[in-house]
Length: 197
Image 1 (cartoon, rainbow, N blue to C red):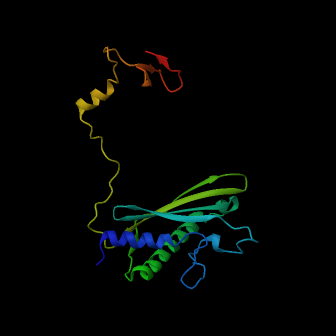
Image 2: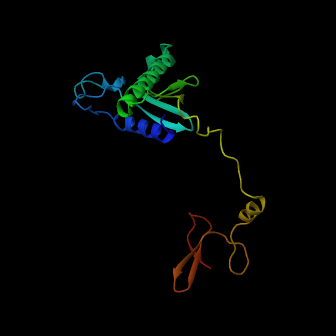
Image 3: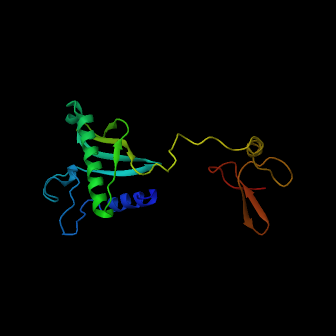
């Protein structure tokens, strides 16, 4: 049974070989199934798309981004097409993980695909999507559960709220800067000029 670190290292090694133009051990281009792989690399107009992954405890988040035409949004199949692409990326990760480590990788979809489309012009649109997958064999890791709580002690927080003080006890108006030869200058904010104290 692989440890969580070995699983993460294996996935990271697979991702190191997925850049555009990557070659396998036989000198052939690695085919992930992305749209950028279609057509001639120089003569044809290529679609720019790609993916990355993030780890969230025992979850793997696959992010996919692509340029699409505006007509693809109005076709009504945008979510299905993007979901199929992300699932194809997950299958590629499993296959390459087996080649790299010799072990199998279990990825189980946790939720639906989240898709956001933003138009860049009247013709082109940029689509971003992600989906979470549960990684098998990482049961020992702590799941990520929302944002961290504010753990600053109330007394320390009130101290920080008071701001800085000058040597004579009066409240400082801004950041003090030592300019050499015993001269200190301050300014109200970053847009104000420095003035001698």
